[in-house]
Length: 282
Ligand code: SF4
Image (cartoon, rainbow, N blue to C red):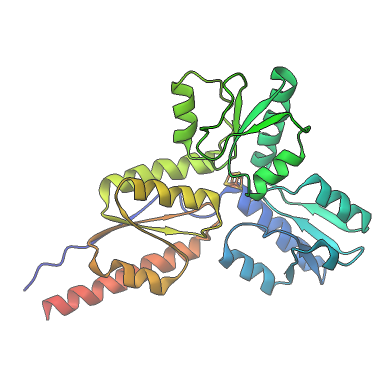
């Protein structure tokens, strides 16, 4: 009989972070009270969650001109630009803000830094909704966009970080002696720490989440940099195919991935491994 050693490691923590849970709860309560609720940006960056909310009646409409006057609108967990909010108010919309308080903490620290130091470096993805909304909240010419890796900071000014920045970027700047304001959220830090353990113990990693999710993307990039095989997905079939030639796999999920997706992925890998081992022993 051939020996069949297979291992599955689950990261801890799993399940949606506090900010995502809060936004979903606010949205679901709203959907119970109103027939139509609109959002302009995905409430959270996870297709499974969005499909579920859309089934409950949430309407994703990215074009402001298509948002009806006086309707209900929920603002995303990542924040919304001031000009968009102003336009919604002009249309008489009822606005419910589901932004994560830890995203607002980044705004607060950036504004404080501008007041105390004159300017602020922003580390983050300029195309990401969180950074777009943050910049709209700061005076013109008061910030320096330093990219996701922080390479373009102006060393004369302190640096704040998109909430989902890879903590290594902050640590590198700190080690180089630059002034940093730690605005990376605990959900991001916790998942990054869990990833370190999986990298140590596994040959390959399944990263459950969306490629549009910044914290999920950073998990996958770090694992790739550690020369691990990585699959970033929410698709169970892809996971089943991915693990066929892997003996020791780790499962980690982004901060907006529901717990049931993690359990489904785990079950799918267990049954794939059972099939492989039954075949080898027969
Ligand atoms: S990842 Fe962090 S900032 Fe984003 S919603 Fe979760 S707790 Fe808030």
